[in-house]
Amino acid sequence: MTLDAPLLEPADQRRSLENLKLERDAISLYESLSRIEQDPRRAAAFRAIAANERRHADIWAARLRTGGVHVPEVGPASARVRLIVGLARIFGTNAVSGLVRALEGDEEDAYGEQDGPEVAAIAADEREHAEIWKRLDAGMPALAEAARPGRADAIAPVASQRGAAANASGIAVPAVPRSRDRDESWHRASRSGTLRAAIFGVNDGLVSNLSLVMGVAGATPDSRFVILAGVAGLLAGAFSMAAGEYISMQSQRELFERQIQLEREEMRIMPDAEERELAAIYRSKGIPAAESARIAQRLMQDPEAALDTKVREELGLDPDELGSPWGAAGSSFVAFGVGAIIPLAPFLLSSGTTALVVAFGLALAALFVVGAGVSLVTGRSLVFSGLRQVAIGALAASVTFLVGTLIGVEIGALG
Image (cartoon, rainbow, N blue to C red; front, side, top):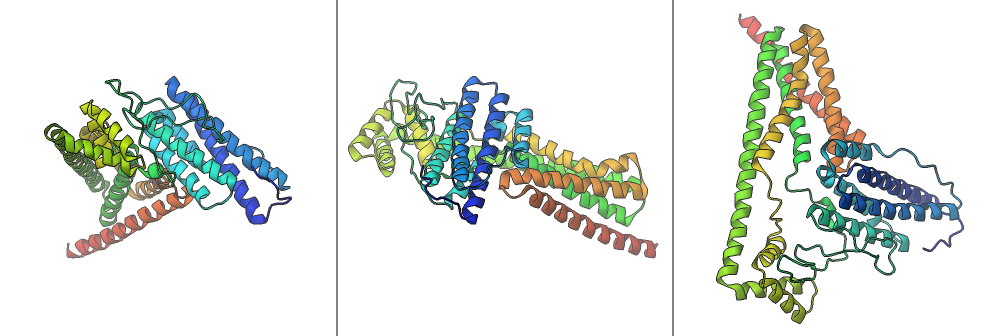
């Protein structure tokens, strides 16, 4: 690393301090994940990434010291990291995979806007972290024995393709080489999207039932009608969400299964053409034609390995991650119900203005928490996302309350 500047410019100081904070957050995240994880293989991978991030932090700390800038003490991790760790404690590290990828994607974006040899080396390391997560999610070994020459980390890439090291038939097939451009895999959410669906399901239940409850409360002071409307809204919304998720996921799954079956049939009927397509896939990745042909020929000796490669590379599907319709329906039902019960609960325990005020305040607090959860997926500021969610919910509830009040006045006048 080059540290020849006697003093850092203010902009460089700020950027280096931000980079140091990013890396310290990553250290805290991966050390926590390694302690939570029960699988020794995954825990070892998290510890290796944490060590890698620690080296990155040392680079920025050394740069700051050499530039005459005080290096701050290690402080608490960001709220976003603490939320991810909290979710991992409850649901496991597999459940937060997409959130960690999104967080790493933000880190890679930050480095993508910077120049310098330190940044280039660290950005390359971050791309390797993406590969490690992909291998872990696929149930493959994550760590190699030694680092590549000239790299700052001790994590070397292994085959990222199923069947790349040695498939069930014992055929060794090299992995498809990756472009060294920015890896977008951080930004792709898992197809199952369970945690993401849960967050947005709670949000839908909150906003829709808050609006319904406030609208009815504006029209009549009788809490019985509010409770009736709230319970009906909860059940109708939860069943509607569950049915919609089931149909959507089942249709998607059937489409994917049909595409995979068509590929299987094509390999049975015209294996020569499929072998040429496999070779073309490897040629498109930069492998010489002769070597691509040899790889395709070896793959075709194991039809399942060849099919797996075609499905992943040509269709962009993961055969093991097509999503569960019942799981999606169940999580949507529960998530919507949890959100919808919050503005309804005060009316079950109280009535009148007290219940109305408590319901409104409780729902807005819950909306802020949901907005903070949304920030885990979107990468936006936790406070910004929370306040935005509160503003949207408050606006919807206020409008429906006003409309309900006007309707109630009109009905009263007619009576």
